[in-house]
Image (cartoon, rainbow, N blue to C red; front, side, top):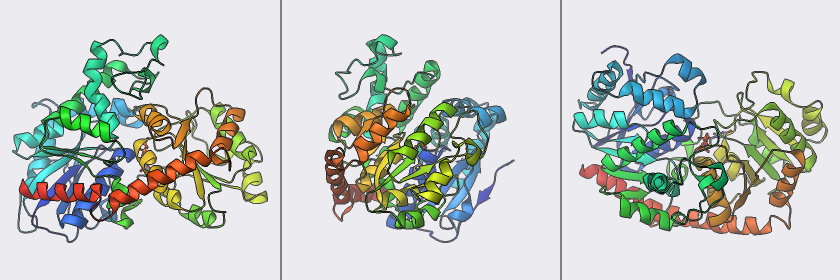
Length: 476
Ligand code: UDP
């Protein structure tokens, strides 16, 4: 078999084995590896992680898991400069079609990984990301059952299921004049909150979503990174609409996987120096600012953010990813406004800038009192889990709908809409962090945190769901 690297991890050979295959992006890798950790820890199951060459994982960080690399067929120019939608599209195009060489390689790797030997117990199933329809087809050709892990919210999946209806009724593709129209079929969403952002290629998105739904419907079970008490009507809608053996809400997965999993799946190296810095700050005083692994801004917006953080008066921890500012490859210090670093770090010790944070630890730190986020689902769930209220600045994919739920359904944050201007940002920061202004948000965030704690207790809904998942896997 050409170009196939199989690396075997250390121990952990249980009675059954599970294969997992994440989509190769941070927000999809993290929950899949957290699920792998939870299954390994809870069920004593052996786990083999399949991963693409694009954004390949480092097996040495997970000695308890086995790894196998799968060719993905993404052309180098798309891998280097494509959007997430373009990369998923290219991967699907390369893997699909039984005469395609990538499909044959995927199937060969899968066949070699499925085969049991004296070291590897038999594989019970493959748990895949919903965007990997071609891999599901390869598994089906080998007689291997598949489960789907949805790394977004239940609301997001329930929206995907509704897309054919939304197209039929003329809500989609979205028209500029109707963006703020409420969707009576999917409260509290409006047309604007659906998966289609201004810049998106609607045809590609429509195709990707249709494939994801096909993958979910073809699967033998559905696992969602949410918890029952957070999205009851959305989960009920899914259970009514998807005819699969199990629909299990096993989240927040970062809380169910072993503690030392935090950060091990990170594609960027996390800078832990910020924890020491947080230790020096007063409880609830720090605004944590991070826009996840993909969202970006232009240099004017970047300067407005820097100016607002500087003058807001609140301590802040700001994650400036190397590719946060569009079209810029300069180092952080050359892009920051004159005197910014000196003023915040040296004179006032009021701020800290890092390239990538140990986010789960940061949000759990007592000093953090608010999160300015792009509202990716993992970030939203991680914030909810620690009772940290949010300013949301969504850009694409499910970020708009997550924002809508944060604001309207749970009341634990609000959207910062419109052009990013220093004055508006400062007002938003005051609304979140101010003693009086932010009190209601903090109170609701704390109530929601207690619900998370409840679902994680022994007998709590997520623990029960995870036990059911282990039993189901053992029965396959
Ligand atoms: N993350 C991190 N360090 C950072 C920012 C983010 O480890 O400085 C992690 C975060 O904990 C989350 C993931 O990256 O698990 C981002 O996923 P999310 O769904 O929030 O957004 P995406 O990056 O997919 O847009």
